[in-house]
Length: 270
Image (cartoon, rainbow, N blue to C red; front, side, top):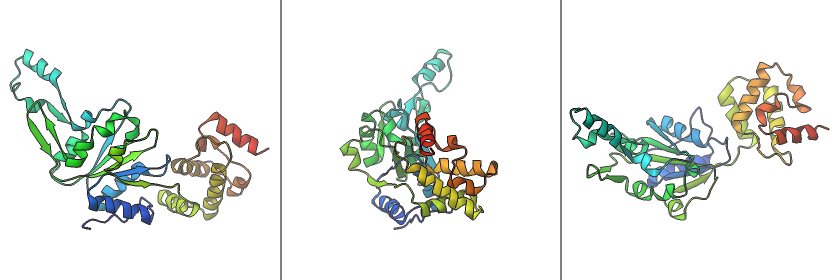
């Protein structure tokens, strides 16, 4: 392989994840990443871009996003407005074509990392509508009768929170990896990336309390990595004695975001 992702100082990746990233790059296929919230799916794309010295282009997908949005938009309203006021160059349709994130990635002279973030938020047809573009790395603009081909094939990373199933035809074109929630040893590495120097006793007590909380029955929204990091910041700011964490969860609202989960925690202390 000409390029190899080996993780970074700011992103703790398992050997399996690093290998999968490199396989996707070698096969020139999109990398589809799933995992529960807080496992670093979105941050992976930034880590890959940083490690390989490439620009990152982010396409944030919403419920209203259409595949066309990522290719280009023809600003017919602006052209009509300009024609009414006799603006010079109104006949140049190409000047009214605005490229989306996928179009921007195709137009780049250098290879980029393209993140299609939370693809499962969009309509079910969204992934299918991108099959040709991701396969052939090109799309056609009928307004200008021009085919836009990728100057350099981008490294495509796609994330999903599994809110809905993705079409089989789309899945066949991807390399897939599920990021498991970090075990306590790996989580300690992640925490140290965020904080550097930390009181060892605080780290161990916080991690024990955090994983015990995640194991509580009936917790609907288990706290994620980002919430653990915020909680440790709160513990430090509040001057909490690490030994207190063996019997109490101070600032529980930093970790748990649902009334029912806070009630479950309260019942567990009785």
